[in-house]
Image 1: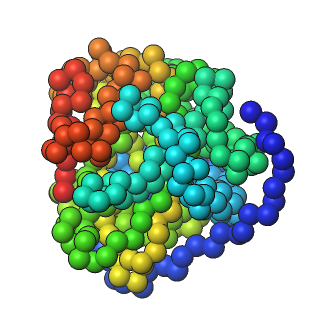
Image 2: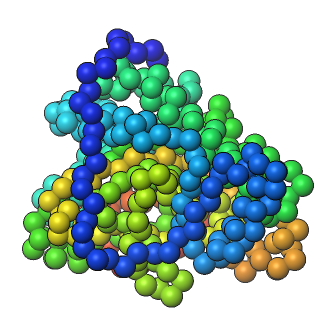
Length: 364
């Protein structure tokens, strides 16, 4: 798809003010991936990964090359998409019932709004497989969005996949990279997202939780700077702590597919979203997120790794035992469809079984 015209008239996006409340934040490591191009940098980062990865699958990436202006430009596009009339956005609604997250997902209303208080626009990979209609504002900035998405894939995802292959002592450091080819079939996408502020009493009825504790079902999730506090991570001790969002960092979390492929060594991390602190509670919470996934037909089975063999990991992993039977696309579509049934009220309780007998836990 080519842009219909060039439009540089988007209002600039300015971040909301940081909270002044004293909150308890998780202590996350920061990986400076610019070191990967320096002598000994890969070895230094690998030691750092080994030191924290079994405690917390959330971490920061710095030295990534994305400028603040580039990120704010994407937020300006995010704002422009969500400012469109609802009837216009619904023309591009995604088919979550079948496990397809491409396009627009509206917020729920009425009673179901407590379950689903956000709207999303997911822009899939820029390949022939995913050609589809988009709102004019996206088509006007097509090349710009495409360039940003490709940079996340090539300059964030691929270097980390090579680093993790090195950590797992694989002879082939492109093992994971070859399972994440951009041109191959797969449901990788850039997401624009907005949570809506709610009255304090309404939030209290739902325990002040905007998104229940869960793991992501992709490989890695990249969250760009977002100053409205709400994201929390569960510590190994079972405590919830806020995740700080430094302006120069991208938050990264390991998700299910990478846990499967690493035999449970790289842990998919439980996280949730809660009501922001009171000095931010009346603000919409915009997010700019990139969900990287394996190619559609990749079987989610653990890699043969000298490290995993040496420490005896893999056979102890519940998820590893079923993963020989399930592809990345089957896993993702099953999770999306299951969440859809709860979101729209087809079922009144969260279903725990996803696929092939694997159960999903919730952590509130």
